[in-house]
Image 1 (cartoon, rainbow, N blue to C red):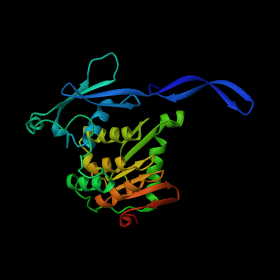
Image 2 (image 1 turned 135 degrees about the vertical axis):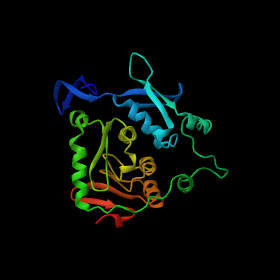
Image 3 (image 1 turned 180 degrees about the vertical axis):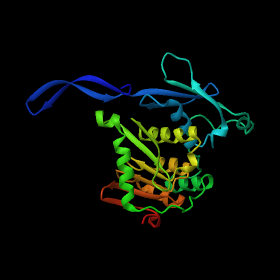
Image 4 (image 1 turned 90 degrees about the vertical axis):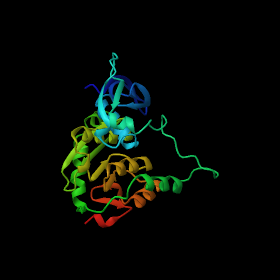
Length: 265
C-alpha cells in the first residue's frame, strides 16, 4: 500500500529482544497553493490530496462551495506534495482572500478566551437547525462502517478516520489520515467534489472531539458529531452554541451526549 511503509524495529518485552519488521503509517508534507500562492502546509497521509485541499479551504472558510473553484491540480513536481487551487472569476471579484494561515481575532483585552471564539463563530456560522432524529443504537452500526474501512489503521495503529452519513444513516464518504483534522477535511472534500456536501448530517470520528473538529462539522452543516474519545470543554460549549448534538466516548453500547440530546431517540 502507498500509505503504509515497512520499517525494521527491535521489539523488547522484559528481557526478550526480537528484531522484526513493523508497518507504520506514512507521513508527508503537503503544500496547498491558491492561484500559485502558498497558503497552507500540513502533514498528511499521502493520497486524496485534492480532496484534502478543498476540504481544508472549505472548513477554514476560504471557499463556501465548489462554485468558488475553477480548477485544481498537482503542481507538476516529481512528488504529489504540492496542490494548486484556482478560484472562479466570481470568487475573485469578492476581493483578496483572508491573510495566509489561520489567525485569531485580535482583542484589546488581556487575551483571547473561549467565549470570544464562540462569539465570533456565531456571527459567521448559522446555528444548525434540528431536522434529524436518529435512534441511538443506529449510531453504532455507522461507527462500525467507519472502523471497517480503516485499512491503514488496522495495519499500523497510527491513523485517524472520519465518516460522513446522511440523516437516514446512509454512508456518504470516508477518509483516513495521520491527522484527525485532515481525515475530516478529506471526507468533506470528497463530498464537495461530488456536489453532495449538503447531504451530510452525521459525522463520525475516530478521535478526541476538540473545538476545531466541531467547527469543521458546523461549516459543513452537520447536526450530529460523534467520537470514540472524550470531548473537550470548548468543543462542548461550541456545539451547544451552534446547535450541534455532540456525543463523546461512543463505544457500543455507551456514549456521552453532551449537547442537544433531543435529536437522539
